[in-house]
Image (cartoon, rainbow, N blue to C red; front, side, top):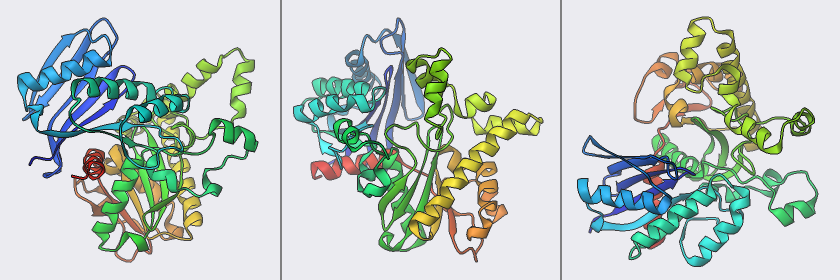
Length: 394
């Protein structure tokens, strides 16, 4: 029996999907619906290296998923062999500590949690409802970004605010990118040939969104993102850590709460510092003498090494520092300066290895480095597919 899993990742106006073959660990087809709810939508369906494009209005996520099903029917592969649908679900709050079969009760709870992730959970719920309506005869599984960090100790997840507010509104650090952090930590242990139970790892998921975690024996004990994905490292358009007093200050200068939220989430980070979010562009601009780009990269690396140093203290030392995701896997000009500045803490970089490009896990530290430095490509889709199969007992 085939182990085909349909994976969905829904945004407010988009729907990414993959038909994933869990046996071979790769996609049979991938696609993207954009501009859902706008006058003209786009659907791109890719199978066997060939793209098929559709331009038409998609009124809502139900219409978008109907378009996805139609694309599979017209261009293949057929969805008849799908065992289950796995839904990336950003925020599970304190309720969902692991992936779970989706029921009406689960959907109702996700709706309650939407205040914690107003940009992410509502479109995710819309995608779930659309998929369950058109594929009602297979199980649907919610895979939570926050689940891997449900193990955080209270000293890590608790904010120093009145206890009553925390209990009433669920205000605490939740963490995100958990699917990636969990997958990469396991792959790192396999690569190093050591049981994950005996490893202390610092995992840097560096993409347009970025987060870092401290993992002790396969269990997350700290992470940079908080109540929302805004906290922590400098990101493509997010500020990361910032003095909360900036809200009152900017409000006093005429900005609304929504405007400040948009500023910090969509107009800050690398984009706000230098106008570029792609690290390849930043590197090119630095080569041209762009001082703003140079400062942006310096700020990015300063924040990154500050967290790595902090997590060395939290863990009481580390066996390996791991880089993953788009920037972590490909940007040698980010990894190099960061690791060199950590030399005194036992991170010794092999410059030649750092410059090498590969899609496989690789060591970029010297043979005698007290702490191993590793690049491990993430595969969130494989992790989602495997988790879906585990939950349905396949």
